[in-house]
Each structure stands twice: as structure tokens, then as C-alpha cells.
Length: 443
Image 1: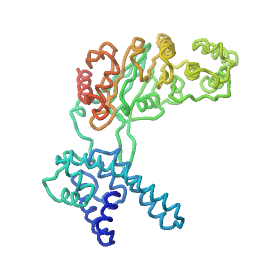
Image 2: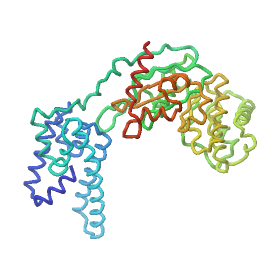
Image 3: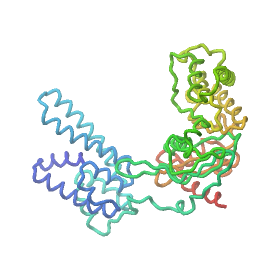
Image 4: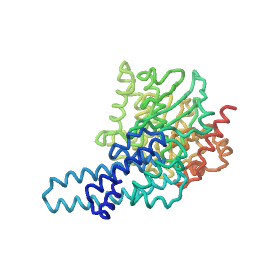
């Protein structure tokens, strides 16, 4: 790694021959280690990418992204320095290089720590990895006694992979979700964001979507509403959201965290513009106006209809943002942290309005970071958790009262703590609950 090269150049005097020899041994060791971990050997020949692949061997992909990027930036600085003649610029480049070295060292230690865990060796091995990385690389690559616990190229197999994957039968009413997987390509590999999420939500239900940071809540919502398609079949009142997206998108209202309104427009004109986008073009002007007036009454926006959006209070802006999506009278209403930035009273009032919408036979799904203050308004809760491979999985779906029994926790925030990883301050019991709920689903 970059920090190793700097330290060894200081020790050995930075001769070209010693540098080539060290790099060759390091690459040779990684070539063998990558083979043991199920990766393509030739990744060892690729500068910068090999640092990321080494981190994959250690189960430290996030740290590997940092080390590979800092190594790349350091190399670019070295190239730039060749053409720089200004002493001031050289000093700036030197300071930036020192910062990169420090960052690379910190994240490199995390990678090496992961390697010692995967190879079941003493933490003292971190020291030679820092100062003479080619030595442990060669030894671990050559000697048979050094074997990784699992293959980096594979998803670690657990009992979860055996008992998951049970489709829910589609219904003529309500929302049916059969999501097999949602993947993305990051840093040269396929990454599983979500897997095996199957559920049916009845009309008239207000559902809380719960999960720790990185569990895939927003990714799940985007997959359900068709904005980011997954390998899945999602139906709403018998209609296929993916197959008939242009038709079905008007049946879905989605309110993101960010407010997408022009501050210089009035509330009335904002909702009229939304009606032009979300209501049929065949609708008469009088009917369109009547719908806008109706929605303003529902969300208490009548008194401020002529006010500029930028002059509204935080609660009024939230209601206006929600009203825009409610114009089309959707059957499914999805809201990503609608109470963000609101005090307890305003948040409660907003959630009570959503409860009224659900009572009209709509399905309302909500993400909120303060669920316990409004939990009495919800019917069900979806709990997503990261499994051992950091993939979002279904840890629970069902009534609130049964969720408390299932997790043996009284508060929703306690449930989140139970499924969060230990390094995130949680109890690290995600896999346990994912497996238990899968068993419940399969009877």
C-alpha cells in the first residue's frame, strides 16, 4: 500500500531495484492470496484495484474503497509533481500527500485487522502488514497453514439462504411484493442490496418501515414503486407495477425526503402544476380546480393557498409536498421521513392526517426515525435488517403488537438496536431474527 512504500523508501533509501523487488514480491503474494480467496489472480497485477480486492479478502469492502482511492490519488499527485515548478504548489501537494498517507494508514489497519480475523491469526500480524507488507503477503500466499475462512468471490452461505424465497400469492386488492433480489455493481463486483422480501399489505393499512442505517429502506421503497426496478414482481390492486409502469405510476404517490417545490410559486399554483402532471389530460379545468381545492382542504392548506412556498412554515411545506403527490388520489402512498425537521406536535398532526388517508382504503407506507411517538397510528411494521453479507433482508412483517412479542422489545427503537450490527452500537442479532421470521413465514 501507499504508506508501506513511503516507509520502506525511507528505510531502504528508495533505490529503484529494492522498490521493484518489494513490489514484485507483494504482487506475487497477493496473486496467491487472491486465489485462496476465490478471486481472479490477475487482480494482483492491477494497481489500486488490488488494494480493494485485498480488502474484499478481509471482508472490509468499504475500507478497501478508501485505500484504493487514496492510493490512486497519491499516484496522480506524483505525476503532477513532475510538471510543477512552483515551490508553493509543491508544498501544497506535499501536505495533501501527507493527509492521504494518514487516511490510507488508518483504513489500511482496518483492512489488515479483517485479514487477521479471516485467516485466524494473531493481531500482531497487523504490524508486518503495515511496515513490510510483501512478507506476510508471500507467507500467507505460499504456506498451506494460512487459509481464509471463506471465499471473497462468494456470498457467505448461511441457513438463511436455504429457508428464504417463498413467494406470496398475488391478490386483486392491496399490495403484493415478491422481491427476489436488488443488485448493483460497485467497485468491479455485483453487490446484493436486497434479497428475498415477500409480503402482502391490505388496503386501509398504515405501515411503518423500520430498519437501521444501510438496511435498504429507501432502496426497498424505490423497488416497490418501480422507480428502481429489482428482480421482482410487484402488483397493486391486481395491476403489475413493473409491466404497466406508465399506467400504474398514477396509482402510486411517493414523497421523498427532499421537497421538490419552487419557492417562488404560490401553494395554489404549485398544486395546479402537480395536477397537470398527475391528472388525466381529459379532465376539465373546473374538475381539476375542484380536485386542487379538495386536496388543500384535506391538508389544511386553504388559508395559505396564495402564500409563496418559501414563506411557509416547516409543517406547511411538508403538507404541501404531500398534497402534490395526493392530487392523483393514489391507492398506494409512500413517504420517506415526512416528519423530518418537525417538532413532536407538528409531526403528530401530520401522521394523523396520513392515518385518515389510510382509513379511506389507501395503503400508506412511512419511514420515520421517531416511530415510538406515533406508533399507535400504525397497523403493521416492516423490519429490514442487514444479514452477515450486509444485504437487506426481511426480519419481520406484521402487526405492531406481534412485533413486540417477536422481538421481545416494547419500543420500535429498541427493535432497531437489536438488529443493528455491534460495531454500530447494536446487539448484532439481525441474522437470528431474519432466520426466525423466515421459519414463521414457512410455517
